[in-house]
Length: 178
Image (cartoon, rainbow, N blue to C red; front, side):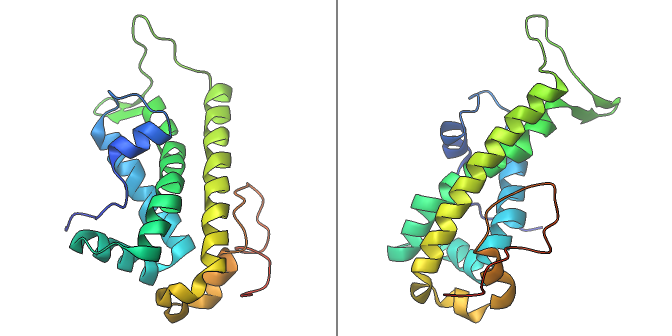
């Protein structure tokens, strides 16, 4: 399997989402990959996300593409990765099964406290998602990848950034394009 090109670094996520510097890379990298390849892909669409990764790999990430990544994607990925990460580090899956560890001088948070931390990170991810969506809607003519993709699915998603446990009939709910 080829390595997945990430549009952010572990250091950026640790800085923006205020994560401990000692956080194990395998947990963090997995959370970033999931945030990018599942959640960000559903917002940007495969065409635009793949174009951003290709430009980043080639060192040609410039102009509106650089603005999108540096001004919007970085922040969204940091908080969405935190959302994915918190439950994973609260419980460890290993040879003994799924366990909860307790250090001598650390007290694990309760399930309610963990849920509150996840909800706070999700709210921040939703805010940055909304900012990114507004930027894309205002500048969609600068991104030919948005016009070339399955725009019914992508455009509908560009009108809603709220994450909640209630199914509201599909992504978004607003008009398909301005």
